[in-house]
Structure formats: C-alpha cells, structure tokens
Image (cartoon, rainbow over all chains, first blue to last red; front, side):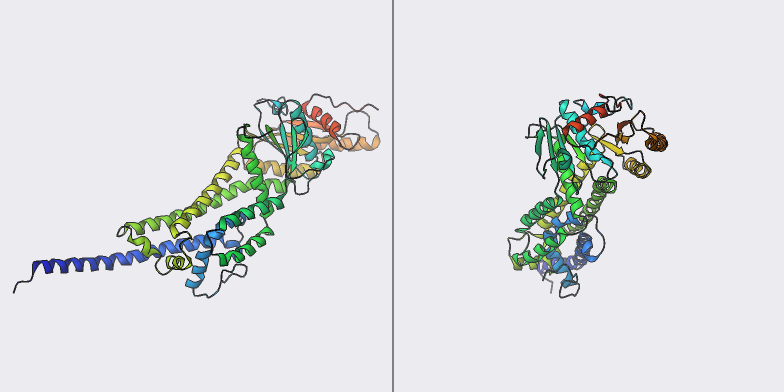
Length: 92
Length: 362
C-alpha cells in the first residue's frame, strides 16, 4: 500500500514546525531572559540609592520611578520575595 | 584678545559673553563684585539679570531690598533674583507627580507620593535643583530676546568655592550617568529586536510571557505596554542628556560664558583660589579674569597698616606668580562698608578702570 502523498507532506510540514519550535523556542527563551536581565540591571541602577549605593543622579532618576514601579514589583516576586526587600521602597 | 587691557572692559561690549559667573571663597566680596559689575554693564547698555545661587543669599542685602525667586527690577536694565532651591525641588516633584498619572496603578500613588516626599530631603536634591534652574537660565540667555526676555547678560553670584566647583562638575557627571543608562537601554532594546526577528513578530508576545504582559492585562489596558514604557524611559533619559550636554557646552564656550574669580590678598583665600582655578582649568572652564579685592590703598597709612602692607605686598607678588596667565584688576579697601547703589557704582567704575584708585579725600 502506497502512502497518501498529501498526508505525507502534511506530516512532514508538521514535523518541521515542531522542530523549528523546538530550536527557536530555546533561543527565544534565552533572548527573553537576556533582555529581562538587562532590564533588571537598569532598574537596580536607577534604584541604587535606595539600596545604599550612592547615586549621583538620584534626584534626576525620580522621574523614572513611575515607569519602573510595576517592574520592581514583578522583580521581587520573581526573585522569590513576597514583599519589597527595600525598606524605603514598597510597592505592595 | 590681549590680557589685562581687555579684562574686564570687553564684558561691556555688545558681543561680549552673555553668561558671567562670579566665584570665590566666602567673604571675599563676590556679591559686591557681581552687583557692581551688573550695574556697570546695565549702565553701558547691556541689560543684566543678576542671580544669586548661594543658598545663604546676601544679594538683596547689598541693595537693601528684599529679593525672591522671581526677577525684580532694580533699575533700568537691571533685574535681580535669589534662587530658592526648595521651591525648585517642589516644582520638580509636582511635575513627576503629574507624569505619574496613567503610568501607575492608582493603588501605588500613595507609595510613590511617600517616596517623592522622602526625596525632598535627600542629599543632593537642593544642589541638583539649583543646577537645573541655572542651566535653564543659561539656555534662556542664548535664546532670542523676542521671547519676553528683558535682559542680555546673566550674572551669577555663586556660592562659595566648593559648592560652585561641584555645580560646574555636575553636568559632566550627570551626562556620563545618563549615557551609561542609555547604553543599558540600547542593550535591552537590542535583545528585544533580536526576539522579534525570531519567528517574526510572535516573539514580542512571548517575551513577556508569564511576567509583565499578563500582569498588565490584569491592571487594565490603559497602562502603557512594555514597549511603550521602554520608549518613555528612553525619552526621559534623552531629554536629560540633552539638557546636561547643553549646559556643559554653554559652560565651556568662551564666546558665551566667562568665569570671574574674586579673592583678597590674604593667605587662605590665595591658597583656596590656587586650588579652585586649577580645578576650573581641569574642567576646561574659562577664567577670564580675577578681581583682587580690598587691596590697601596707596598713601600714608600709619605704622599698623604699613606693617600689613608689607605682608600684603608679598601676597600680591604670590598672586602675580600663581595667576600670571589671568588678567587681574585691583579694588582698594574702602573707608566704609559697601552699602547702597552709589558705592557699588563707584566699585564698578574702579573695576572698569574708569576711576583711579587714589586714596579717598580726607
């Protein structure tokens, strides 16, 4: 019995998609993580004064705070801390 | 420009520098010099805005009137004001508060509010606010007069040395800092773009999987998306960098800005001035001239003051050596305190070399 050529093509396409998903997915995860790390670092730089690291520009970074509040909240949850670890900086 | 002959006369010329900083150790006569100079410039047709940046203001006292953070007309062609850093900080915080709307869940307002109030007391806030105001005034000085500006020259009566040097260094430090932050944004954005290129477009959604995006969906769609947020952060930083770079460019432009150093022929002011002028040179801030204040007048002074004069001559010689490259003018010690416009005008004439420094008639 010869296999149905359309069926075969369909299966091959599906297999291709799965393979692509498999390889790209790994890269996608890596890229997303890199970006997230970069954003975390940025946020911590802006908040450095709050963590006791002198920041010459802390006055000017105030205007960035509203943009970073949500990210900070998400960060401490992701780091396994239920509440903000910074004494002077609470978000929840 | 030939030194000595051109300072400080060239300040009166219509094409002369539009921003003057008067600096020096506390108590050497910065405010007097700044006021006398501003009066003289106003008289010769260059309208001045005289600004005191010292948190302990004495500008109003010299003129015997009350000054505030808004320019007040002292006479034809002369406005004066005393900066109020607390008010500046307040205005800045208000602005941050205003920008917060639409960026943050209302539940967080209270927390941010608390944070902002804490920052009011933070070290450096007053300094940063002062610098902010100074750089905005400087930007105004270079803009067209048509925009309601009633002056041509800005004269800054600065705070004592340390404060001033720090103020001058700030734009450089801040520019470096914003630069660093922008680089971090660039890297973040580069990762973001790489993500997007992977399986075109879909990646954008995946990037935030399980974190920001799902979270934003919860709080409502009126809050900005991650990309929007990133964009706004970049905008804020770019705007900051623009204003720092502009302040720094103006500060270092000899055609636009002139720094005038005041000292008295005594040991400590000389030592401090040597250090300060050195630091200014390191920051490439142009010192166009020095005012040597309270030099004992010529003529018979009596044994006590003659003894002082002998010492003073040694100090003047040291000033001549240390600052050989910088044009100087001498202003004599006067019989009475400087008070009121008349004495200031006289000092202005002495500064400009229009009046000889002969001993006052007895």
